[in-house]
Amino acid sequence: MSETDKKFMRAAISLAEKGMKTNSGGPFGAVVVKDGEIIAEGYNRVTSDNDPTAHAEVIAIREACKKLKSFQLDDCVIYTSCEPCPMCLGAIYWARPKKVFYACNREDAASANFDDQFIYDELELKIEDRKVDFENIIRDEGLHVFEHWKAKNDKTEY
Image (cartoon, rainbow, N blue to C red; front, side):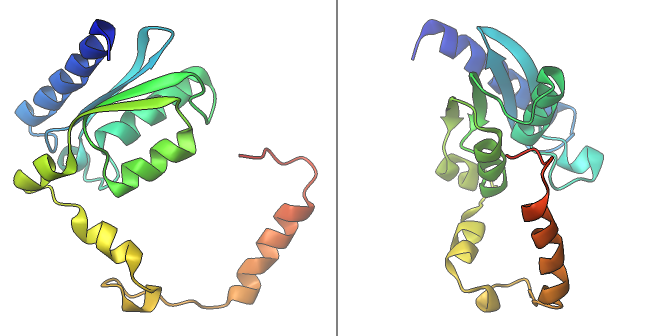
């Protein structure tokens, strides 16, 4: 960790503070850095946007991808004020940055009543044993679209 890394992490922490003070959502902030410059930032806006996906990391990733005109964050680094939740972790893996730095960990978040452990626990269960009811229906019709995708010659792989 360098002084530059600390500077970018402090920017993420500052965004977490900003979001919290404006009552936009929880105390979380994130920045995306490429070539030593912040290209995107976000803070939690779950409650202000009425959007459960408006987490700091997701907002920053969306902004960075728009700016780069790419669905991947090649050669980018994400600095986030807290260890990403399962949803943000998935978004980060899909975005494919080269590294992620985080300040607080999931235990720190849980102590502030942001406990994602129940989601980690749910992922370990069989789908039929999860708290939210999932039911598989008309799979054969859904598979039709995948067959077309596999045969499509002009698709963009990701």
